Image 1 (cartoon, one colour):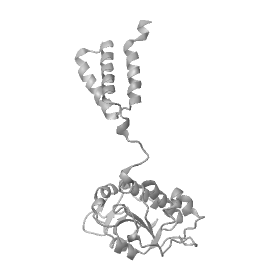
Image 2 (cartoon, rainbow, N blue to C red):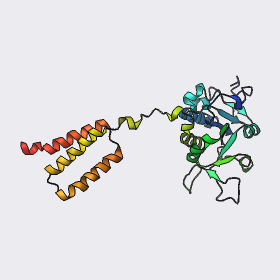
Image 3 (cartoon, helix red, strand yellow):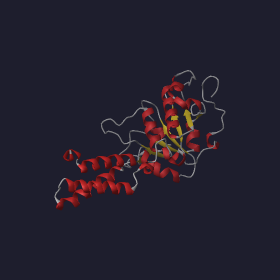
Image 4 (cartoon, rainbow, N blue to C red):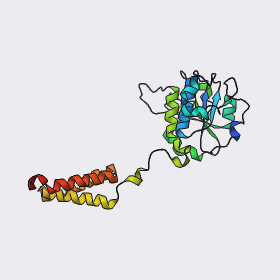
Length: 263
């Protein structure tokens, strides 16, 4: 970033910067407000994206709202943004234009066919070369003339009555769906739920305790098999943790012992 707050035009050309081949760059065309640029930079930081390309950006004052909205992205993503031109963008990248308005069929090829962000997550790794997600202006998005020069179209599924999203929202949703292309191994701060699932021997003890309770309650014998199958299916769907299974086991054991009757 130069001293006047503008992205540096003299940086290494985007196509030669070091990055994972399948991690898309994020390009913003003619953003009207610095705050939206900062919001997009923050979303990039959230989901592991690093390369921010700006076409005709507003002034990005280090003391202004772009840096105020960027969170920790003010330290790297935003100051490392590269200002480029639309011509250079379409010449050097496989471009994906993001728009809320699509055509319904191939009578008009400008906004059709289109993919959802989830579709892109499965397909973009097969693209051999640098890719860029392209977002347009806050009010009108990308023009038909710009979309006509872009390689493919992406649209976020939304309400038919009001599909338009603001620029920051659209970028955040799209980057979230594509996070596995940017985060190493798709890793996030969330724990691996498979690691905390209760071990099978403990679950079997839980089921045995349920069976004992049904006997203690004089549940009709002809219904017990069906009831136990339902219990297994319910617990099987929720993936109990070890702590949860142990707690339920203790409660069921106490219920089976019927301490109130013994007193």
